Image (cartoon, rainbow, N blue to C red; front, side, top):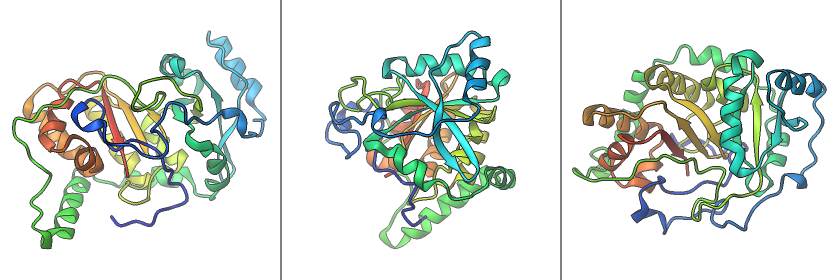
Length: 303
């Protein structure tokens, strides 16, 4: 997938899978390398949301008070609201809002605003693309066939170099991922600024990429593929997206995969969805599979 580096790509993230400590200390990237290199939400002027008072009142009636809403993402005529949140409180607030999704019609997403990227989002996502069309196209994606096709594509692209598949290291181990990284500094674990919550107008978390226009650059799947794959994993494992940071996506799963066979099958799917979590992360598909057997959070990062 040698896609063009599109305007919706953001330079953020960390080139390793959280939990594999022996590999993590040497990997840094511009957006998330220092606890002190933060961006402040107050530096960008966000337009007001006309119906914000109604939305805030809806949450208040359900027992949750939220700060004043402003437009954080614009997709054509669609305005997506959000509000800043303290880093330490982000996941707890997500859980409260997620419980109310069926009642409110909004799915919450925790976003980290590295390097004042919200200004870019407001100006660059106003592309007129239709989330409804993305959702329609996603219904036609056969996900198991997509994984198989992606494997064949990767194998074909690298056949001349003798590539024989994902890196293997039988018996390799890796710590499970049980904490979200996006609201915190990737190396120190300290809280950071520039974290907020988006209220995406859908009741299904797997539909979020369609509304945010997430993906379609470099090796990152396009929004249609993201929607189809996230729906597949939601139906298979109960996985739900919780955080993202431009090039990072983290999912919450209610229960980790238990069997070695099941973990390896899932690791293979995750590898062809996001090869960087192995190639620049765990180092082998076996280590990824081992981590998944105890992970309540799935971490993806695209270089």
